[in-house]
Amino acid sequence: MYRIISKQEPAANIFTMVVEAPRVAKNCLPGQFIILRVDEEGERIPLTICDYDRTAGTITIVFQIVGATSLRLSELNVGDELADFVGPLGKPSEFCETPVEELKKKSILFVAGGVGTAPVYPQVKWLKEQGVPSDVIIGAKNKSFVILEEEMKAVAANVYVTTDDGSYGRSGMVTKCIEDLIAEGKHYDVCVAIGPMIMMKFCALTTKKYGIKTVVSMNPIMVDGTGMCGGCRLMVGGEVKFACVDGPEFDGHLVDFDQAMKRSAQYKTAEGRAYLKEQEGNTHHGGCGNCGGDK
Image (cartoon, rainbow, N blue to C red; front, side, top):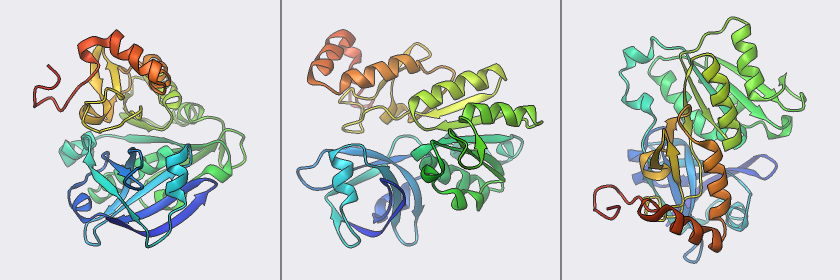
């Protein structure tokens, strides 16, 4: 069982939990995620790793109440235990496999939308530990939904907060902030955008105009985390990919966001899943890529 060490509610219906999971903490890297179950009868939900402490053996997760399982998770308290906490899953951020001297030559921008601020934080923190500075845009609907601002300021070179209604920081969506920073003389070689799919889509469209390489972290429906369910199937550069095993990070300029958003909506119903399975044929399931289950 996986004990909850601490719990906070930094914004309405958004919770931060630190969970005792030593084996996950020992092996995880920025960009990866976990899948948990609240109890033996619960559904499996994926959550990105927000932070980790290898010495304490803990993992920090951030989640928003969007359904029954996240509501039940929010009702747990310090000392309660989770039935399952599986990870690390997915591939680490490409930064983790890039020579540090190469990273130091690049000007890096992170764009975090809403709860997407959580998976941005460990990447920015990891880069700082390597001596690589980066800028961060935190976008939210209004001031009450801004999270991890102070934590981000401790690890980023510059943090720009923008709210849709102008109630805090800059006014406007994250795409406007990107264009404003460029107009102010900022130059970026790489942009990492994490948040709602619609936000990542328009970030990628914006950065494409300026020739900025863009990485997005895809968050379609996941069930098993091994590609077998077919829930997180994506089209990237015209090729079939599965976010849980091929990602979650992909080239934002190659992702078919419209198809991904439409498919996620279809996958939520039994009829939609049956339709997708029939339509996609033998590419519906991915498997681990090694056992032959995807052949």
